[in-house]
Length: 413
Image (cartoon, rainbow, N blue to C red; front, side):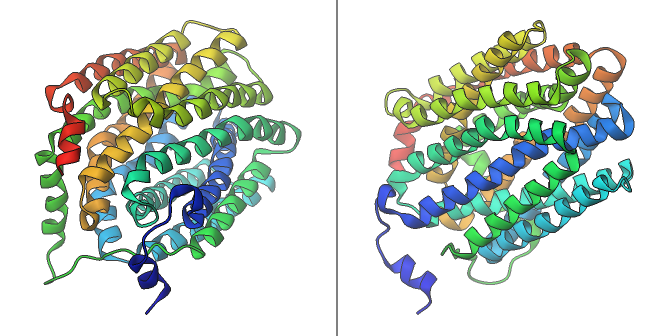
């Protein structure tokens, strides 16, 4: 019997004693740490090469185009060994991002290389995230899913709190290329952590079926499960709004407001600090508030924080507004993830996640491109204001009746 089979035959331990899950979260902390440095370094590389908000919009759009490949990612994650997928994605990103950092340091990189790298990074990110989502229920008990997803969101925002300030100093004192190299090593550490985990999956059994059949099975399940369908519809529009905001965030703070890389880093870090608390109270709120109320409240308040962000220019105001937005995101995100995991059978997990991401993220490439166009020809403030308005309107979809009794439906399943 393999280690994976032995693990499956055992009753999973409680979360506080589940060293597999704790190691998994620790590895994510390191990866998230590197990602936050990337979010500062990569846009500044684009600005250094072109000085154009439109170029940043193009890069962001290219990085998000692989969202449209989510149905393929879902089938692969259900058909293949998920652990091997995670290892491949981590190791290849380690090599790719390290190479970009070195090329930038020696000033032998072009914007077209960044375009190509953005696409590959996007492909690997989509495949990794889908496979990781489907692997989590193999590590923990079902009753611990709310908790582990909240903790995972919490460590993400811990990275958001700690890494941007450090990343800003690195970029200012050294070079964006150095930040990219540091990010690459975070993926290598993630590779080592995944290597140590037992996350073998139940692959699809029975006769070989066509790719179209497997993809359609995921779509049919989501459409049938109305709570999943309507959260996806709400996120379809809200993600478009937040994409407008996030694409222009660094450019807005640097080019229009005039903040230094260090100030930008600290502003993002302050947002991460508040979001840590949001992630930690998410399971507490879930025990007292329905999914419907929680998702609507976070969506509306988060959208309002983005809208107001476009009107202010002081560091304190912008930091507080960013913190409010990240708190709302850190409360709602674990709820949506847990809802999908609890309502979906294990053999369909990757495809349902992929289908949901395809449905909710389909407008991300367009949103990034629109953000670049509005930022280039009107202003980055207008881009952010439009994004906030769209997010506020989208939050009302969470009030659909299918989400009213979702906790009861979840228990019945």
